[in-house]
Image (cartoon, rainbow, N blue to C red):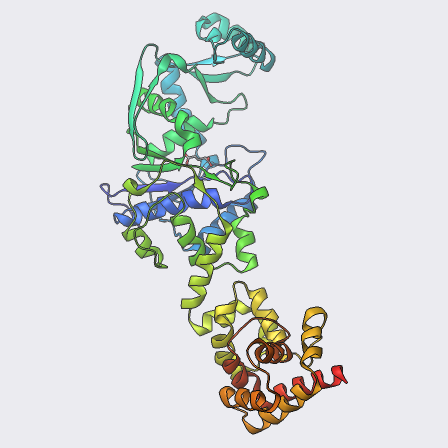
Length: 475
Ligand code: GLU
């Protein structure tokens, strides 16, 4: 059985499995993973599935798959409190129960019977008088008998934490420095819902402490939750982790990242053919400064990761940057992996003995498997269907040009320079007038792989057929 060294740094990712994980969640997971690895620590996974209606097993599976695909492996074994990882909050009701009891017995938590309507009215009144809405503590004054009478009526209370008055909660945020919050600004908050399930503030803080998490990097939308959680842990005499609140990811218009900005789930990126290391290299730099602009492995990214390089300004999502890293990874990846990534349709079009030559030729011109498939079609399909601009360029080049091209490819089947020279000398064509019709006749495209690479890749026979096809179209 694996147990942990109690002194190592422990981080965690604690998603709520209520949907597919998006880039924002994954970046949080990545930062925590990198932080742990940067100090030979452990990265834990905890599933916050307390919202029974919205949490789904398929989302747990999907997020585990996403993390594994990215290489963000989580520590598995026995945690400080004897529980196993990944831990599921829905399995931990007994643990929470004990701590609720402790708080209630010491008068630090009390049942609240206020209805949704009552709470809404109170909030409205506070807003109308210019105050920030918070629970005013009505049920905190109920006597034992009053509570019992309400329970006897069958009312189902929530449980609220009694926030200490007149205190300042202060903590050093790993990203944002010293933070101070006045406890008087915070109303007594719910730690157990009326249906008995734990509220986020509670189970999240308790589990971090009990499982020995020492460092939490999470989105800055959680910053105002932290004083509540620190007060809870203090009341229970439980050790608190250090917190670092990372800047949110925004779209190019500055608003929080959403589908509208082209942000997609990790599953979708994977299905479209983005490579894990491209996603990692991109996200690692989204809100974290790296001096080194090389494409790095996860371990290399970890070695240069540090809380002092985390930025406070919102990080801007830019799909062009993701594409940049994708191309960097494609430039480096080995032939076999790239071939596999291209997929079966490409395999069925490109002859196996041309695999390496095909990859060499198209590598600089592809971003997604779909691009590889297009090139496989362009280069190996029986015939090209030339239309529009492409057709016009071929027609303008004229029949004599393609007659000369057929002779040239027969004379110089493996030397593009000589082939080119011969056409130039026979027809007088040069520059664009020479290259463009040739490229279009061979590939159907205006741009693409090096022509010399195409000559050996496609072979004399296929290229001659394509020139003959152009001749037919013209005459
Ligand atoms: N389940 C919470 C969320 O997904 C976790 C927040 C945290 O990292 O503490 O937002």
